[in-house]
Image (cartoon, rainbow, N blue to C red; front, side, top):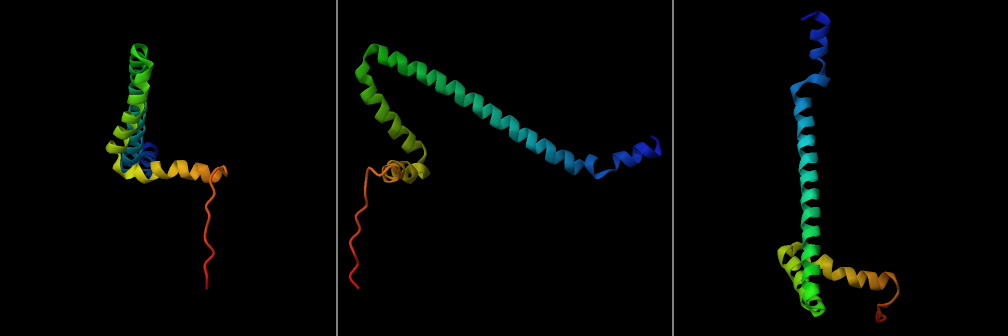
Length: 106
């Protein structure tokens, strides 16, 4: 190997540590892509299953939708407060709900 190629190979850009960092980010990108494709597949099959259930009886939506909401809350316990606070936040934001505070007597 010539002196010039050896100097180029020893450049910090081509070090093993830099390439390991690059591989780490590529692995993360591939995992995010797999998660996105899996989520799309699950949501399209879930939508098809919901449409099939509604073809039997439209009233099943009154059972399936709250049951799905309860299932999501059960599977993600840390999100409960955010899910429950969101409708109140929307009501406050659009002025449909007013918070009445008592004047403090000093």
